[in-house]
Structure formats: structure tokens, C-alpha cells
Image 1 (tube, rainbow, N blue to C red):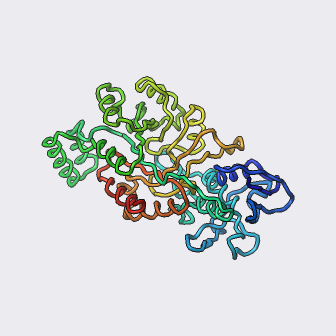
Image 2: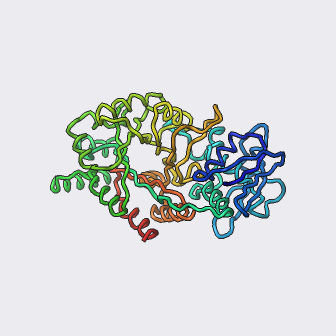
Image 3: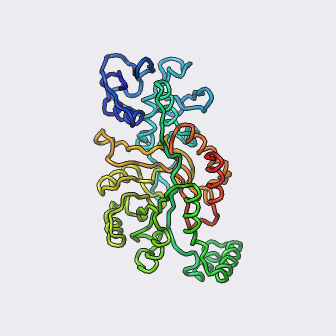
Length: 411
């Protein structure tokens, strides 16, 4: 059994961090008066300062005061607090850093919203320190566990997930063509879509019918995929295929034994109407959903987490940003989010998003394969599980990129 020594200040927050680090272990907690953490197992131990969670009042750090520390043989991580000069790894407040990042403390206290009323990625401490592509909490977790000779024997290094926002590209082709010319003012897009439509006529298959491709990708990687389907329409951004029994049954047949989750409609989280989406899911599918993800990733963490817990979902897959890739909470691992108001973990798991195809289609012009390589490399090194999201309505086929990168590392 692991022995943990710490003082009693902000003890719920400290226990939250211990449960993240030692989720598969048992530990015994002893309180002392020192401003120091100490972990012991058999004849091995690690100690480091208690700085952030040693304060009566917890305040967000000022970004200009953040320093970077190069961990030997890996990456630079942000150092938020220091007693003197950080010269060694043991000078870093591991637990304070993990809590600050994992709980989304910085964006909770510094929310700025975009055009969809989502917290912008610029509010993230990970983005501000240029570490959003590094799972900092997982890296620190592994350092602590390695110092005690604890390793993850079994971990699933990735999850394949797919959002079904719309079933057909050419359900209303003339409306699409008119939109290309009049709304989007793009003759190039009009010609591209017209040629695609002509190919669709000859092949009798819509470009968005990629479900067989997604299933084949999952089989090639020997994993069971997650598909998220919309079951409510409360805005112009929500499709209504769930109301067509023939289309819905055909889709479910194509998805076979995949795990089916609910794609929360555009307004359901911020308007607190998720229960309506879930009711529709139950009526159409016959069971209550266990998994879910927000459409457009439209949420703010507190509203999202409250809605997920209130409606009894087991795992949420929403926690990421639309416009950048990487680890919003500094982890690729499933974890329980932190409830600031009640000073406790929420009663469900968050499976944080790491890589999404539409980030590179609409916002980020970097090479998606290079980014996925980096994300998956650090996920493997820190013994995490990269959550990958593809859309059937993506204009580009990212399946080959995903297959190449994952196979290259796993073979």
C-alpha cells in the first residue's frame, strides 16, 4: 500500500489528485504539519513542495509569472509556483500543477467566449504556455509512479469516435449549390460539389456515407468504435435524421455492434435541455444512452458537467477545443472532472478529446498527420488513451492518416 504524507489544507483537492495519480492503487493518508508531499512504497519514495494547495485562498496564476522547466528526455512543462529557483524535478509542485490543469482552474476563473458561446482556447493555460499538445498531467503522473516502480500494465492507447452530424451531402443538392454561389460566394466550391454530385449519381453512394469505411478502420485497428448520433433539433445546426425511422434504422444497421452514444444538440447544454435529447434517444433506440458528446463542442465546462451528472450519463467525450488539438485538461486519460462549487469530483468519467479532423479542415492549417504523430507519441509515453474524432461529413478522408500513424506506432 502506498503511504502518503501531506498537511490538511485543501484536503479534498489533494485527495482528488491522489485518486488521479493512483487510480488503480490503494493508499494510506497521514497528515503532518510540513509544507511537503511525500509518497512511499516499500523502500522507495518521492518528495516535493506543497505550494498551490497550501494556501487558504486559491487564485489563478499570472501567465507572465509562469516559467518552463525541461524534464530530462521529454518536454518542457509549465512551473506555476516556486519556493526558490527550480533547479531539479523535485522542486516542482507536482500535485498543485496537476490540480490546476486537470480541474481547468485557469479557464474556470478566466472565461472568454467565442461566437458559439464556448470558452475560447486562448483562455486555456495549456495554450498560453504552448503545451496543449503535451499531456502534462499524465507526464507528471508517470514520473511519480515510476519513482515508486508502479506502471500501467494494461492501457488502451486510443479510442476511435465518430460524430454523425448529417447523413447526406446531397440530400438537397440545389440548395447546396445555391449556397456555394450566393452565401459562400465560392465558384470553386460550387464546381467541386457539382463534380462530386455527378460522381454520386454514377456510384449511387453519397460522399457522407462513410460508415463502412469507419467500421473497416476500426476492425483494422482491432477496436470497437463509438458513434454519436443527434436526437433533437433545436437550432439550424442540428440535423433531423433521427425523426426518419427508415434512415435511422438503416444507419443503425450499418453501425452494427458499435457503441452508440448521444450527440447533444446545439443548444441542449447551455439551455439545460439535455433531458429532451435523452428522452428522444430512449424512444428511438430503446435504451438509455451511456455516452455522449456535445455537437459543435458547444458547452462551457460547468454547465456541461452539471448536465451530464444530472442526467446520469457514464462517460462524456466533449472536453476539447474546436480550433486547436491537444489536451485541454492536460490528460488523455479518462478522469472525473472537479466540481468547484461542492469541492468534489463529479460522478462520471470524462474522456477528453485529443484529435479532431474538422480542426484541420476549418481552423488549423498545420499538417494533421504530424500533429497526430506528436499527440500519439506522447500519449503512448505517458500511458494514456488518445481520443480521436472523425466526422462522416468531413470533406477530406482522415482514415488513412489515422491508420498510418497508429499502425506505425503499434506494429
